[in-house]
Image (tube, rainbow, N blue to C red; front, side, top):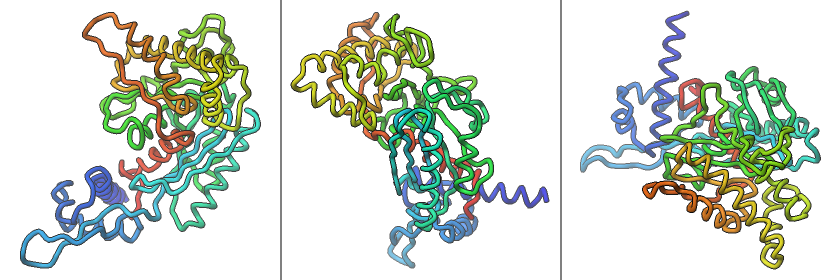
Length: 391
């Protein structure tokens, strides 16, 4: 029994090495995969045969290595059956993204939520909808991750604290497990961490190894990438910048305290400054405000004030973390330069030493589904880590 378990573990690890090579280094022949991974050619051949049967790998093109002999065949990741599912629960909406092993998005859905009390029910309904969608497409869901705005316990299933949602415990993970017929497979992660990974691999953070991502919804959270990897802290709670006392001292936060950063720069704070109503999603709301700012000086001034308060907080956060790039997601995206310009001005004026440089500020590129996309990428990571057997 132990011998069989050891053989299965070795096979998963070898298959993961082949898949990682195809994902990160591109298409390759069996011989090239042997050279890249250090595995014997016979081992690569056996692994590839199994991965082809599983719909994970397909032939890409024929290539010649010389003037004689039969042409070789390059292989690539297939846009086929194995997929990862990512879901996000937030105050105004729930979202889902399905990605295959190549990182290609196979489906994405966003549903508005009528009230905070309806979030858990809306997420469950969306999980049921995605499970049917995946099954009808002939795909195989290999894992799922749920992104939530809050603190997640070390088991990556228990929600410890979500001040804006009021959801705790393992109920969310268990409900999504049931939708797909799983037991204990769903993981729960912080939404900012998931969105940071998505922007790093698919969006505004591409090509950068040191990145700070800020969510832009009712809450403000941060995901920090250092040397291409997420920084999660001793207990996985790193990034809770929204509740640092760096906002306007009198601003009351959803957590019950005053002075939290998100109470000054979160979406509801901006709406209060503008005297505007909230629309279906943060992006729709911000796009409407950006349009109004073109002709309404008061709305423009309110957005610029939000930018200055954002910059004031970034002075402190960037001084501690020194990111090369700060990506602003969520409702900040449609506002663009309206919020970036005043934030940059505050950052530039706060440098203490001439050798310091402010981080580059960018708006995200992935919209509402950023956290769900990052969650889906985390779901397929289990395959690349050799934790899921596709063969």
